[in-house]
Image (cartoon, rainbow over the protein chains, first blue to last red):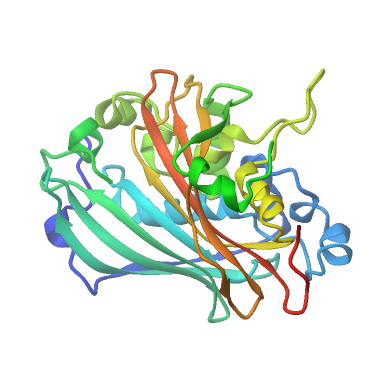
Length: 159
Length: 175
């Protein structure tokens, strides 16, 4: 039996998620682009990125960044955490040599009309203190050790 | 592919367009490659016993939903694939707005996506604003939903894109 790692009642507004710091290399960018099936050259060809896009290097693609945000959230919730919704606002790019830092805070919690517990989060990924992308997310959390948000479907899942 | 002009907007609102099936079924290898690329150790994606217990079998990371629709870089005998978000380009053309930016992107997750699923997508225009002037120029905001369904007809995700199509200050209105 897998124990839920984060229970809804232990989470409250104002709580910070543990920071995640990650040194980005060219491999990070290229692996992420191929994993997301994004074959566009600015995510693997530095010459193209610099001379055609006018950026200083290849940069992380948005769908892979979504995967980074998901990993950041579920590192915190454990496997019982089930994403309901995410919204992204892109502000700047992430390049090889950058250390990207994910930080997050719980902004609200609640239990919806179907009895599903949730937490709302504000998350940023920044480099040297500059926010590159911000994300708001809502994630369902188990109410107790017998609850499983993944068991919900149809009318009992209102993300 | 047809331009959406000002007189076409009302008829286009809420109508599913450009329904398309992904080129390949959802597959485990890509799930692992994606988890590996972001060092996601969630046991749902690596431990079949945990997946069985929590999600009734393996699932794909929810944020991968658009990955299943990016076409192969090359394929034999392929006809020209439509552009992702074709409705966005139809609006730009029909409203004579040469420039456009996407301001934000929301994904809402419904039924889990599982290896072997065949997903389909369709685009739905939800709203077009009156003409507005921002620091970029004068144009209109629009919201386009991309709905994803599995082979059983279950809704698995909805992506909403807010776009702003515009003319730079000083440029003439398009046709």
